Length: 171
Image: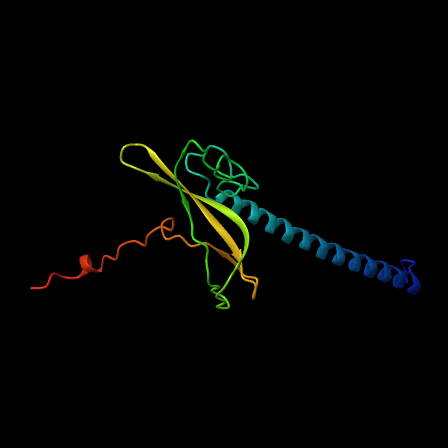
């Protein structure tokens, strides 16, 4: 052999080239995975840019937009305050219940507490009529179910049935 390379040297060259090929194949796989990850990221960013922003908005979409509506406990309408004694125009004592609707017990029920309920009506003369109802809360001695006194005056009436207006006129 005229170049002076022995068989042993050639095998060493082949082994090094084989290691180099394996290393390049691994590096190629890692680079392909990185390219796929970056392409996916580019697609996500492009989709985010295409999303609809609010009308008349000059800015881009916010990253974490807040949901619409009032947050619980915020604002002046968390709880309506009870009317002052000067605002109350009438007081009604509600009858105590005498029958338990759950178990059907009829007899003396145990008094638990006295609740108050207010109904505010707007009358045409631009004055408010505030009616205060004293509602007894009772407990059934048999099943321990809580019962409220029932007053038909402070429950809202059901809307009138307009079946008559939907029916065709009879001849």
